[in-house]
Length: 67
Image (cartoon, rainbow, N blue to C red):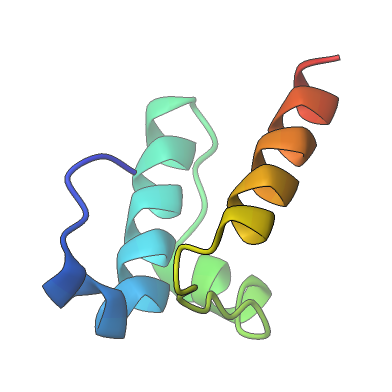
């Protein structure tokens, strides 16, 4: 999700769900936003303090996804 600012972190769950729904629509998956919200109801994104161990862990998971 590009262009996320520090002020947006408090509302990151809603921003993610909206971006995910938009991406699904773009990819041709036609599902209602209510269903997306229901399916992602238990998904919660939490901010980090940008510590190096968290960043390294996230980078490693991204590499795993690429493979």
